Image 1 (cartoon, rainbow, N blue to C red):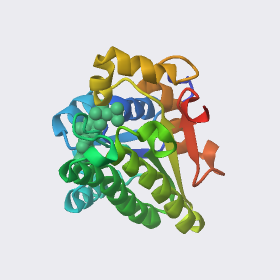
Image 2 (image 1 turned 90 degrees about the vertical axis):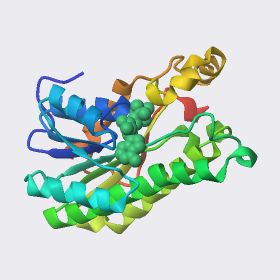
Image 3 (image 1 turned 90 degrees about the horizontal axis):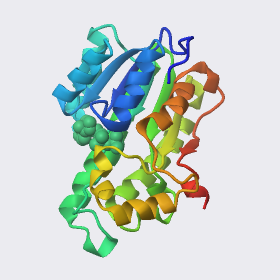
Image 4 (image 1 turned 120 degrees about the horizontal axis):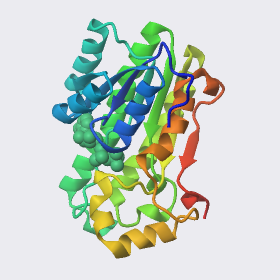
Length: 253
Ligand code: ADP
């Protein structure tokens, strides 16, 4: 929910995976808080529709492809929209393919790593370059409980990418702390979006996850937008290399 005083006035934010789900909620909230927002997604049409609805801009970006990532940043610079805030949020979870370790096909492993871990790396790599050129800013990555505790047992590839993202955030935060670049992770809990539709359609699995969530419900994309606004603004100027868990208590069990 937007506050009456815009907290991101004058900021330009790039959000990946902004065509749907958590990414779209973040981008919409940033726009409501006064930021100039660029909605980036491999699905250009959904990014454009979402951006149009909030009077924002869109760019096609396949985070797993370095040329596509570089082209998207170059496009932003050409439009005079070089970002101060970068949210590396795009991701996939290959339900039906990702599984317990002994059952993960190499193809599913490679695809999950390409989008989630390499994609986050490329978004952050070129984001750091853009921020070094412009004097600094804030990078926020979307992590997961599966990268922190045993929640990832049934999704070896997905949980490995999320653990990798948590480490990438720390490494990058330490490397650029002297350059006015802050890097943090937000860990949403079990959130009902299209990415988890398969789980949601299995009442047993859904009840199991909600049962392991102390606050007793599934999250919504809007549950994580407040922490994102905090991390995008100067209110968080002393926070870097941190993991912010907004997971209903799941990882404190
Ligand atoms: P979540 O629950 O994480 O919000 P969604 O499936 O709703 O999951 O959203 C993930 C978004 O990431 C989708 O809009 C999807 O198109 C986007 N996405 C998936 N792969 C890529 C990619 N390679 N590059 C950029 N965006 C991607």
